[in-house]
Amino acid sequence: MAFSDSIIVVRNLDSYYGTRQILHSLSFHIPAHQIFVIMGVSGSGKTTLFRHLIGLKPTPPGSVWIYGEDIGSWKSGDWHKYWQRIGVLFQNGALFSSMTVAENITLPLAVHTNLPREIITIMVEMKLHMVGLSGFANYMPAQLSGGMRKRAGLARAIAMDPEILFVDEPSSGLDPITAAGLDDLLLSLKEALGMTVVVVTHELESAFKIGDYMIVMDRGRILVSGTPDDVRKSNDRRVRQFLERRADESGQDLEAYLERLCTVRSRVKS
Amino acid sequence: MTITNVIAHLGSWGLGKIFGLGRMGVFLLQAVSGLWKPPGKFLAIVKHIYFIGHRSLFVICFTGAFSGMVLGLQGYYTLSKFGSEGLLGAAVALSLIRELGPVLSALMVTGRAGSAICAEIGIMRIEEQIDALRCMAIDPHGYLVTPRFIAGFVCFPLLTSIFDVIGILGGYAIGVMLLGANPGAYWDGIYKSVAWEDVSMGYVKSLVFALLTIWICTYKGYYAGVDSGSMGPEDVSKATTEAVVLSSVSILVADYVITSIML
Image (cartoon, rainbow over all chains, first blue to last red; front, side, top):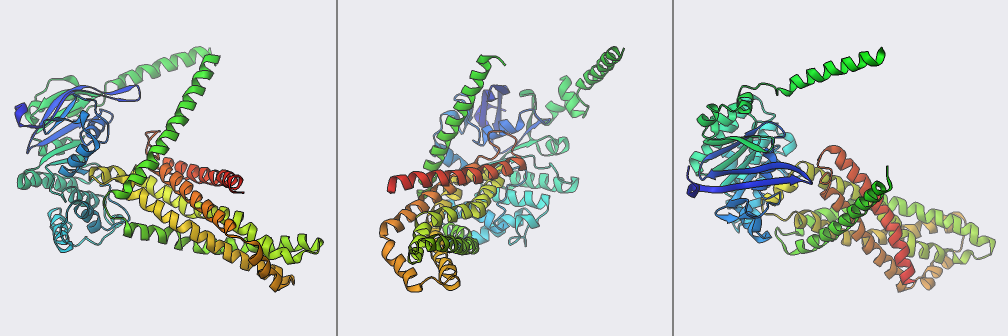
């Protein structure tokens, strides 16, 4: 994978919440027209990285290049243009609860295009058909199941036919069948529309099913990066632990701690 | 705790407050700049006028009537001691138009609509809907905050006017119809004593209260959970409580300041 094929390049990205460092010198690149998966356990820094990439967290200059431009030096106008070229599916869909499904999908089209109302209606129907929600246009988000809400959110994210689609935890909280359906949908979006898809997930099956390239993160650092096969073959202890779904060895520390506690209590009693 | 720790905590608290005030100022400027940003705001303004204005009508009429009635009752008994029942109309009208109308209607709208505005925007914040707006290249301030400001500026003076009129009728019902004050003297007293300056003071107050209420309630909702980083339902409830308390206190403080300037 050459840097020249990359749509996003990250070099030595550090990130902080206050004085606490969340990301430690991350470096990787995301190739165009592929599905790139960011994997890791909870608290590994996936979401912080995701928020940097979609522009919701300020990025220091010289750390992230998108379309060959340093996003750390972007002004609000540059972000405005970038946001019109990407689609984002948030973890719970982030649908506007006071609008119907169709109104949610219409919103970006109505704001950013001068298309006539009839054309927008047809486009909304097409997007709903794409995500398997035909006939649900006039439903309110509260009337939909969790999986349907995510699919409706996906329909809104692809309403403007984005070049890059960012997806946060597509399978979380869904049953295996619905989750598999959503994975197939992401694969078909890549194949049919040639989108670059960036997925943040901790679901192994989903990641290995859809990912062309992936990184595995832990405590703000990248443990391994490459194709799914590269990740599977990794000998890193923490990667193996993650892939084999073993609990952290710090559990042994807990046992030792409890043992010490018992000793101290018995001493206090005596 | 050593003295240096106390000073450090005080300094940190003070810096936090200054940062909050600065952010509130920037928030207001962003709401103003949102006027010129898409999408169009006409329908959103109409919707918020309905929510802030129309849906508050009952509570405004109800409190307006009882405020006027209690003024009529108290005023009649006080004035009758000096044989001045003829001044009842002027006393009721001036109290309502200059003070009670703007203040009480603003407090009522804060309790009914301000809390709902704060909670709605707060829920949008914790459910990532505000982030979704930004990622769709839609300015959240222009979309969520600006229409509410315009609706507030339209509704507060109108609701204050309704409060005043209903209050004056309430005072008439008690003072004249129940206690027997002279009806001609009641209306004549209002006609002769209420000047345009009194009415304009009421309107200036209601516009300032609209600014404060919508500003504080939208700001608190917009930043619900942002500082704590937890983004949970408790952040929305905390923000709503803070918004109502701060708005109410600000209304009373601003009332004193405006009165002292305009008298």
